[in-house]
Every structure is written in structure tokens, then in C-alpha cells.
Image (tube, rainbow, N blue to C red; front, side, top):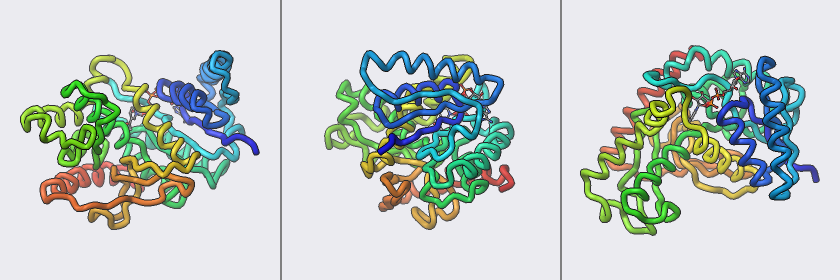
Length: 311
Ligand code: A3D
């Protein structure tokens, strides 16, 4: 049986780390695709990663290319093609440029691997995953956006930092759009099963929620040029792994809602089961009135950006 084939569309900051993590987890053979202008850069990254393998002894093949034919019959695509934010920019500011790129990428993936499972990372995320879905015409279970996994990881990190307890034991989820209106469901956050509301004061929790909402921007500001890449890469790899190994993990992802949480026809962050069937299920649960109001609020922002795609 041949190894799964994972193609990374965009070989920049996140793309390079995706390749490293996918190789280390031995998820399959990896193709890093980028535009002809930077073909040498992705070929070089691929070769560098090939030479890192002997130390750990993993056998994945990693190649770099700008030829769409090389991604033919891939099992999984992870798309980071586009431009990242600079300080002072909203994710929405990237729409025009990244939409053009996403349309091109979607048409090519449809041609090369119509059965593949596709994880979108490019921003503005909720609109980009929608654009991919519309242009490719893929079934909804084959298309998902990475955002909630990262936003939740950030929330978990800040709770662990606050309590001084292991981040491994912190569970929580962040729902909604991937922007400043995202919805941390603090009521359900726990450390080792103990509600965080019993461990952290309401004031501090409000500050942690705020930091989570703006965590991407905090890093953009520190970098001065570009956005976060290590944690975004790891978040997407967990989604790819759950698909390839049929783990059926429950991960907050931007999935197409068809009535869940009162949302219809939009990709937005909801608890999603990922397994061999791709997006197998959205786990709906009862929100409080306040949480539902917040979710409706974030939905309006997503709707506005989606409308701007004209799709
Ligand atoms: P960067 O390092 O600039 O890499 C992007 C790569 O895309 C570059 O190498 C480009 O050459 C390449 N590219 C441009 N056009 C095409 C094309 N048509 N086909 C293939 N490749 C192309 O950026 P990055 O890796 O830091 O970020 C990538 C994207 O992810 C940006 O849009 C970020 O805003 C976004 N991002 C999303 C999250 C989420 O949580 C959703 C987090 C962090 C970054």
C-alpha cells in the first residue's frame, strides 16, 4: 500500500512548518507547491527537510514544485497560499488578493484531485474556505477551515499560563468566525475536569478571553512583518492526522453549517468530528442565550466578508 500524499499549497512560513510536522508524524509523502517565482525556495525547503529525516529515521518523501501536475491524486491538501497580515491590518484586508489566489487554487485542485480532503488556512479564513467550496464544487464533507483549533489552543495556553497547570489538561473550545468576534465558550473550559470558572476570577477570565480574541494580532505586532506560523501549522496537522488515521477527533473547525446552531449556508467555527469521511459530523449542543447572541454577532461579520467575495 502506498503512503498517503499530502500537498501543501503555499510553501511559506506555515507551509514549511506543515511539511516538517507532517514528516515527523509520518503522515505520508509531502509535496510543497508554490508559484514559479519561488520554486527554488520550496525545492530547497524540501531538500533540507529530506536531509533532516535520517536523524529520526522517518521515510516520507518531500518534494518542492510549482507544477500542478505534481499534486495529482493527493489525499489531503492544506492551503496557505496568499499573503499574511502586516501590523495594522485586519484579516479582511487580505480578501481581494487572497480571493484571486484561492479561485486559482480551487480550480487546480478540482482538476488534479477531486476526491481529496482540503484544509484551508489562508485568511480571511471563513470567506476563503467558503470561496474554495463554491469554486471547487466539492461536497461539504471534503472542505474545512482551520481556525478554531488554533484559537482554542491559544485559549488553552493562556489558561495554563494563568493557573500554572499543565496545558495538556486544559480543555476548551472557541467557536465562531476567525476574527475579533470569535466566541470562547468559557463556561465549558476545564482543567482536568475542574471548571475554570472555579479556578480563575471572572475579571481575569474576561481578560484571557480578550487576549485570545486578539492573540493573532499580538503576534503580528511583535513580528512586524507576517503572522503566526508554528501553532497554525500544528493545528492543521492535527486535523489532517485525524482524517488520515480516522481518529474522529472533535476539533473546532470552520465547517459548513446547514442549520446547526441556527446557522445555514456558512462556514464558521463549530465542534467538528474529523475522520475518514472528512467532516463527518458537527456536534451541536445547547448554547446559553448570551453565547447564542455572540455567535449570531460573529456570523454577521462572516456574512459580510463572504458577501464581499461575490460568490
Ligand atoms: P507566507 O509565508 O507569505 O506564505 C504564503 C505563500 O503562499 C508564499 O510562499 C506565496 O508565494 C504563496 N502563494 C501566493 N500565491 C500562490 C498561489 N497562487 N499558489 C500557491 N502558492 C501561492 O504566509 P504564511 O505562511 O505566514 O501565511 C499564509 C496564510 O495563512 C496567510 O493568508 C495568513 O493570513 C494565514 N493564516 C491563517 C491563520 C488561521 O488561523 C486561519 C493563522 C496564521 C496565518
